[in-house]
Amino acid sequence: MKVYFLTLGCRVNQYETDAVRADFIAAGHEITERPEDADCLIVNTCSVTGEADRKSRQMLRRMARANPDAIVVAMGCASELADGVVDADIVLGTRDKNLCLSKVEEYAGSRDHKTSHVRPPVSRTDSYHDFGTVLSPEGTRAFLKVEDGCNKFCTYCVIPFARGRVASRTEESAIEEARFLAGEGYKEIVVSGIHVCSYAKDRGGDIMDLLELLKKIAEIPGIVRLRLGSVEPMSLTYEFLKGLSETGVACPHFHMSLQSGSDTVLKRMNRDYTSAEFEEKVRMVRDLFPDVSITTDIICGFPGETDEEFSETLAFARKIGLAKIHCFPYSVREGTVAAGMPGQIAPEVKKARNLKLIALSSELEKAFAGSFIGKQVEVLVEQDNAGYTASYVRAKIESEDRIEPGTLVSGTVVRIKDGELIVK
Image 1 (tube, rainbow, N blue to C red):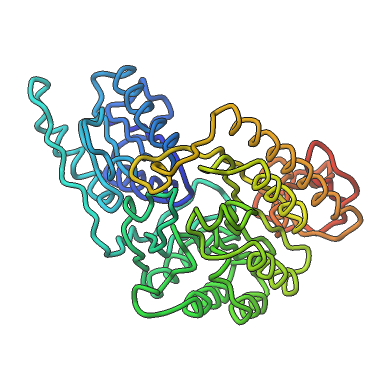
Image 2 (cartoon, helix red, strand yellow; image 1 turned 180 degrees about the horizontal axis):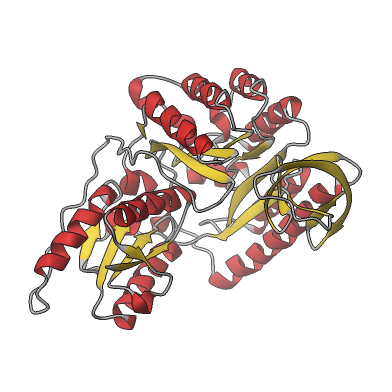
């Protein structure tokens, strides 16, 4: 068969798509980049917000219409939470993705267009499904999933229901994949999960178990950079950060989820910190990681958010000197506490606030990039003599010679051009 994949949502979803794609390739199927050429269309869905859920359903309908003879597969978070009919022949939940190949081959072998397909049951078990070694399509950076699920219940989020509770990979399996990736030439490993700082909590552990895993990965020959996926601020401790800094390969880049800079909004969101506590964690990170890039997510227009509360968020984001903000207007997600809260914000107000956040993020990005002028940086080249610094700032090497992807190049930042550091 020719198989087409579409992935929506987070990096964990992308990792899992890569794993399923590898299953199909190993079984002799062909991957196509054109949905109209495919015999099977696989959509890895997202349901993190109401908008993401709507887009997932829209893409499934679009696939079914564009290629009516193809087998359509819906898998992932939106599929897990689907109450009604999904426009797909096969529906798989978040921890059923490993069944995708067998279900497609079974369906293809017995398909009768006159009969409807009965979807396999979705799963919400708490066990961690290990995909084994997964190759990333990115040539120098690979993602290593070590955890799934979430035990937090933020009032706007359905992920604990879609992904289940925290489930952790074994240390041995994670290290085995890291060694495999290093052997395949990947220089940078991004350790990720749905709530990666909860790694080992299902086994009675804590964040120091994650540190021990990271230390062992850092010792693997060939790995020159180790980066963490999104982290929850209150999970970070001084002992963890100090140990991470001492590995010598940990990147000075932390994506710390903020969501709001207003304490009253944070309380309504059921976040487990205040703005002052978040700021203290930022200070701790900066003490241990020079030139650190701290990026974040912020939701604007959360139910009941006043102009004053939004102004508090803008002021706080500027005060702590973020490197970039991923901005999201609040999207109602049915099944969450926030969906039933009073004071739902008008769409035009949310849009206006989001534009202000985007403008602030652009301002902060320029300031952070500008802080590197005259400094020495190392760039892990990906293609066209460009790549990223350890602080995850896009950079281009000014050279007439072609630099081989995967090369770590040191140089001085001489200027900024189109948002990129120019390095000589």
